[in-house]
Amino acid sequence: MARILACTDGSIYAPSIYGHAAWAASRLNAAVEVLHMLDRHPGAAREAELSGAIGFDASQDLLRKMVELDEAQGRLAQQRSRAILEDAERVLRAAGIAEVTLTLRHGALVEALPEFEKAADLVVVGKRGEAADFAKGHLGSNLERVLRTSICPVLVASRAFKPISRAVIAYDGRAASRKAVEYLARQPLLHGVSVHLLTVGNAGTDEEGLAEARFRLGEAGLDVRMQILPGRPEDVIARVVAESGADLLVMGAYGHGVLTRMFLGSVTSTLLRECRVPALVFR
Image: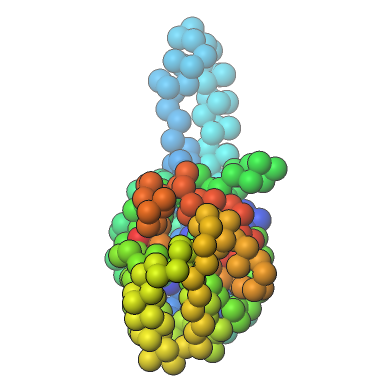
């Protein structure tokens, strides 16, 4: 049975993460594992560390109170984590997902991800996390590292979930976009979804590769239209996503030509910031 790993920190993006995970699970006939990471071990403070912070001559009573406060904060963090996971299970089961697993771990998501995604077919994360600066449009601090390291396709959830009926695939002919086409041809994720297969470039730009990608998707039963448009990739793709009313952007984490810079700080990061739709990213 396919498995989806939904990573949540309980931020404002959490309901959208669960919605996207449920959507993908229903299409892939998959189970969902919800993973929540606690960044630190509750009650981990030690008297030696605390005395170093406040001075070696600090009273034992003050040290004891600081340790108790640290332990209380740890218990509160545990309770919050359990509430986050219980809420995720409630939402997923209400959406019809029968098999839901809840996992709480200590540590950083990027350190735990290699272990958990071994059994996963798809990873779902929020575009921004609990500590993101919404006013400045910053992406979540974990997102770049997850996308750099994940061996699975990553579905980056937008602010709110809505049913997906139209998708744009940004195809540049390189390995990541070819991998996206092969995945979508093998899996029923986009069956019944109208697909716009888009390449940014001049006339004659890898027309053969684009036609082959269209054939592969069409052979799998997808409704596909293909198009080559000139311009700056980030501008063209963002415009097509907006004007077509797309509900999903599919893209690779690396690009072609002017896209050859490493992921994030490049076209991919711009599209993740600017497009107000979820993105399915391959690397």
